[in-house]
Image (cartoon, rainbow, N blue to C red; front, side, top):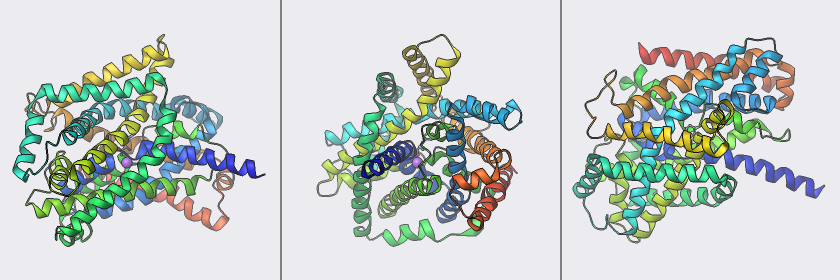
Amino acid sequence: MAKLAHAQWSSRMAFVLAAAGSAVGLGNIWRFSYMVGDSGGAAFVLVYLACVVLVGLPILVAEWMIGRRGQKNPINTMAELAANHGKSKAWALIGVSGVLAAFLILSFYSVIGGWSLNYTLSSVIGTFNGQDADAISGLFGGMLGSPTTLLLWHTAFMVLVVGIVARGVTKGLESAARLMMPALIVLMLVLVGYGVASGYFGEALAFMFRPDWDALNGGIVLAAMGQAFFTLSLGMGIMMAYGSYLGEDVNLISTARTVIILDTVIALLAGLAIFPIVFANGLSAGEGPGLIFVTLPLAFGNMAGGTILGLMFFLLLTFAALTSAISLLEPVVETVEERTSLSRLGATFASGAAVWALGVAALLSFNVWSEVLFFGLNIFDLLDTFTSKILLPLTGLGAIVFFATCLDKEETRKELRLDIYDYSLWNLLAKYIAPIGVIVVFLAGFF
Ligand code: PHE
Ligand code: NA
């Protein structure tokens, strides 16, 4: 008996680590903080938190359950489950748009992963030591202005991702995540402590949690929902694919809660670490994608032990970015492998090369192509906006609608281990609040 209990624990633990490895990444630290800054603070944060609970939780559970029922890749899982329930094969489109989203996201994700790699090296050689805000901003601007520097680091990041996926060593990374995630949290706490000491912590708290509802608009609400999808790796079949490896013994709701709390805590800590530095140094919160790269080095460059802490931080950030990037490349590789005559290895290199090429277009939008605009957005912003605000919400909506309308109620209730009363609450969330919420936010963002 004892042995069995242990086996169960370790399979649930392995699953939580894999899911958290995908969820926790640049989205929590880089993207969350810059979106908060761009969107004016607390109203965004509170809408984001509401989206995580009301939309993110049910969709995460839905994706896992669909994956566990289907036991295949997302496209085939959706096609087969739909057929079993007498529904149209068109549901497989959910899997298709998920793969497309993964491909597009990875291209610009790798560019930022490259920044993180670059900053890891800069921390090692002490580039940030004793520098003031202007100097740090200058270093960042210099990197953005140099296509070759961006290209070098984007390429290095993609080579790492492709190398890891090609060698199939992702399992080892998952167990490393077990150590890295707590280390990341501890480091963030150190940075929050630095923020408290700076004397601007109160201002940061107010910025993040005291909302000015008048400033809220449909665009900010859509951005907050997009961030919720992005950060939880939802709406792209990744969590569905993970669900297909899931044993019957795993309690989906409590596991989702664990992953969501971890992801959210890391994002909020990132905000509480970054905004005191912004206010203490008279920097702009609306700095954009460069926000963590012009704030954190400033803190590390001017605190005791900053060199080693900065090195550890960017190393951990790079690692978190790698585990997420791997989860993004996997579904693309799987699809290419199944639909072409390429071997696993060939599919990995071909997918990696295609992602890399699109990433080059994204990085050029920071310099030579900065004037190349579509719908008023440069290529980088276009990729980010199109995926987080359109593809992910629509795919996630498809998954939750399928879940709520096609699967058998009583079976679902038993699988979720809910009594009748809790199930009616769950049903309210999954069948009405989450889908209607996504539709309303989606429309509000465009009109
Ligand atoms: N969730 C990851 C992050 O927060 C990014 C990601 C998005 C990974 C979508 C996989 C799928 O960084
Ligand atoms: Na995340």
